[in-house]
Image (cartoon, rainbow, N blue to C red; front, side, top):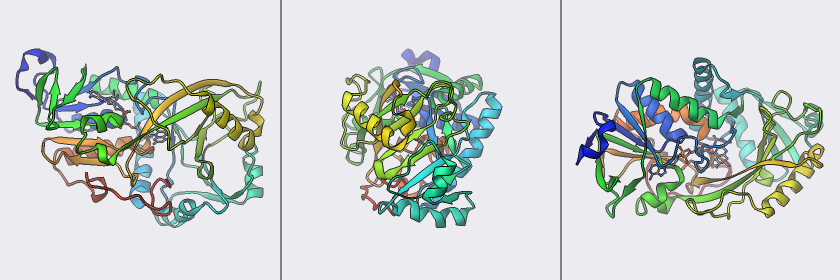
Length: 391
Ligand SMILES: Cc1cc2nc3c(=O)[nH]c(=O)nc-3n(C[C@H](O)[C@H](O)[C@H](O)COP(=O)(O)OP(=O)(O)OC[C@H]3O[C@@H](n4cnc5c(N)ncnc54)[C@H](O)[C@@H]3O)c2cc1C
């Protein structure tokens, strides 16, 4: 890594690659680049695993469903194996394969309908249940206005915070360095560290939702930052029904909702996506508002009536960086050819982490070009049938 003035950066001298942002995209890219033999420095404004990052929570859902989209479905399939390898190597739980139930709402199931052909083609295991079967198989749920359920047994939840922490430790053990800095850009979107130009052979900028403010010209026009509020609810006394051992994660697009069972005692996680919600990344209190509590309670009363008398036990106010077509951004900056920008998570990047990291490394090192879908272009909003995320 080269700096215009190296004096202030003694510890990072000699690195060849800098990764800015230690969320899942940055950590996995750093690991992959390091495994290719490069010296890599990972920089973040805060400690990896900090609660403002999109990657930080007890868990993130792992699902294979991406509608008709084969590429993300394949990435998910490959990532599942990679997560399992990583947890075996690190000897800690990173992936809980409790399954994922996709609840297809009557008259609102384009995305789910489009998935069957993809799964059949790619050999993704699934079960399709009608409402009667669903009620027997998943007694925790009430299935009003449901067309059918698509159950993925090879899905579940990733222990998100732990994955960041343990992967960062692995990165350091294997020779990487982690630094606390706020990297900024100037009016030409050139990178600066502590007021001096940041020069390196390759810089991967994976600053998550902060990418828009770092790149107001290049990225802000294709990135919306959407607040996501999550509530964790207690499980009934002396009852294991809602634990990850007996209940799947679920995706309920008709209600813009999703959730996870109680894993490691977290309580049942539920989120209702409010796409109109905005967030001030650096200044807002990360506290869930009363309206969200009320709305989530109402949803749980209808969908998981056994939790109606339970209490909120934890909460998480976070954010998603949405691109119009919900495709990620993985591309060289148009003016700064040694800079690769990675982000646009659109709510489904975490689970792809290991495969995404390898892809970013390949693009950054110019082993191959990026995919058309990941280019920094103006983007079109897709129909729910065409969208990989159903949004
Ligand atoms: C509520 C919620 C639910 C989600 N559910 C799922 C799910 O079920 N499944 C799934 O796969 N995905 C899910 N996602 C999406 C997934 O969590 C994100 O796609 C992923 O975590 C994004 O990771 P990232 O590394 O791009 O960003 P982040 O995790 O936000 O990391 C960016 C990092 O960059 C650092 N940074 C920013 N600016 C600078 C700077 N100028 N200088 C230095 N450092 C900087 C930040 O401090 C931060 O640590 C969800 C997201 C949210 C918010």
